Length: 402
Ligand SMILES: O=P(O)(O)O[C@H]1O[C@H](CO)[C@@H](O)[C@H]1O
Ligand SMILES: [Mn+2]
Ligand SMILES: [Mn+2]
Image (cartoon, rainbow, N blue to C red; front, side, top):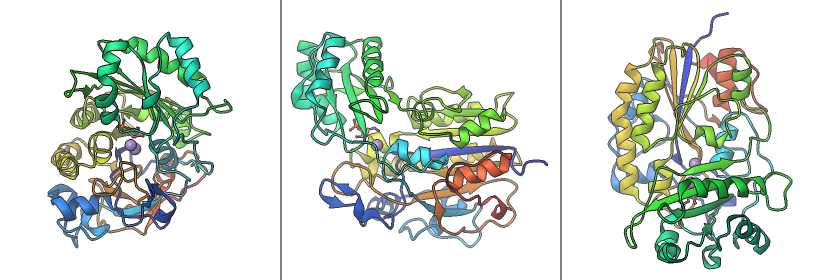
């Protein structure tokens, strides 16, 4: 049987949530529950959001947005999706989108990492770890506070966040990127599932510059755990379909089920360029292209910068015509997110929100809003389209897309 859609392109706008989830009161920023958070909604309300292309696709039909009007004749099917997993981090969100139900949350380290683990890292690296930085910290603040000391002593800056991450910040001139990667690989190897100190992701955070003007570089790398089970990426790969990743996707799934990687993004617009390049690959005639754009989250959401976040969404909006133009008649585009990160909310952490789903295909006849669904409905739909097994959870809405 021929497939409804020859190629499916999924873009994750990292952290672009669209309103508090029904269980937002169980998730927190510092001591405040995530109730009332709304990443896209508050950006529209507080700093304005001009996104004519998203508007035509039907973004304003998902939920009332102050500056994005609903439309009676959207060019795409739209809805919002709820998370079922116990977590509001990137890995949980992405893994659930591809069909996993993460019922046991990843451990987090609100008091910092245990002394024993730090000592092992010191023994391996021959470098001291700055104890004062070992706690939940903003990644830009931690290098402002301890970068000058690191430049003098060569010590390691190890910090965490509300997410299950162990991050190592290192000035590129003091601790070469290759050395930092080796240290991260070592830490990854001693923090796997079943180890004493399981950690979701080890993140290398290289930076450059001088005190007061430090800047993190695109040499960031995430060393994630492998997904806790097979995802639809695996099923597509096993069935011989191209599964192509752009940006952080390869890291987030530890490469599992991905058979071609377009590399890390220098920034979100570079991610769009890589996506467009992938869309013209000669061997990509069917299968999945899966893109993560992380600047929304890392540069603006965690930094609580609503203007920057708005501009980043507007920049993506400006690229939508190119992306749609590059689509074949029977391609399907799905634009979504992995969790919220409301830049107007208290704290600096993710927010438990619905994620938007905005779709487009040149083959759509009469697109309209869809009922509210769940994250994994995305992969269930992809799986049904390509005739492969779906994940543990998710209901396909493929039949609705006509
Ligand atoms: O403050 P920075 O270093 O950007 O850290 C952020 O990036 C991490 C990974 O995306 C998140 O856990 C968040 O804390
Ligand atoms: Mn994320
Ligand atoms: Mn984040």
